[in-house]
Length: 269
Image (cartoon, rainbow, N blue to C red):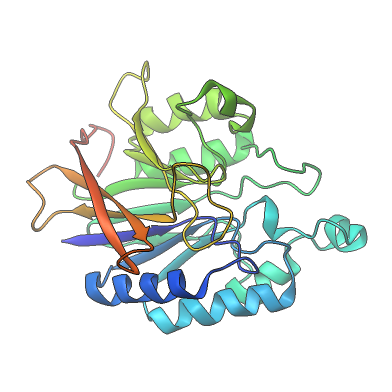
């Protein structure tokens, strides 16, 4: 079985020590095969915040796929924002802003949806759409096919529509046709799993809350997602588990499981 741990929006610089400790304990207990950081790793893209984030990830000791969010670009240092927007991210997490992870059971593709010229909004370009589609189309039949972005591709609240990823209307049908199963995101600190309609085949948006930051939304505590594919999961099913931090138990507790059944496509493999 492959287990993927999605951590989003930790906003190092606003992290809470008890929540960090609980998340480390959860990772040791569950032993995921891959850690996905889906953006806003830091609060203000400072070197110290990136070092703290990297030190925490290193102590977990597992394969990592990390993408930048809008908070991972300097906001107030305009020279750095315009000329070297990803320098501090790259120093901590490498120069590849669109990393990939491939194993016999997983194909996970990172997409950099942050832009130096946008404050919060993200976008995906035609070239990025086609790059991801090409990789998806060559996935192996056993692989769960996951695309990771920062901004959401679908929302559950009308008031969050302004946060939607620009270019999603072009990207989603193209990625669905190429065989994508899941699109992971964050940005709005609200966790949910949402079936994406009208794409010709099943595909789901999987959103994570803020993992360890004090910047929680009302009714949405610190949370992470665990995805299970193969092994103990029913054949052909992916189990998406939401784990919330409890201030009472000082631990992440499983809140619920969404059982989805991806459909394999003829053009993959």
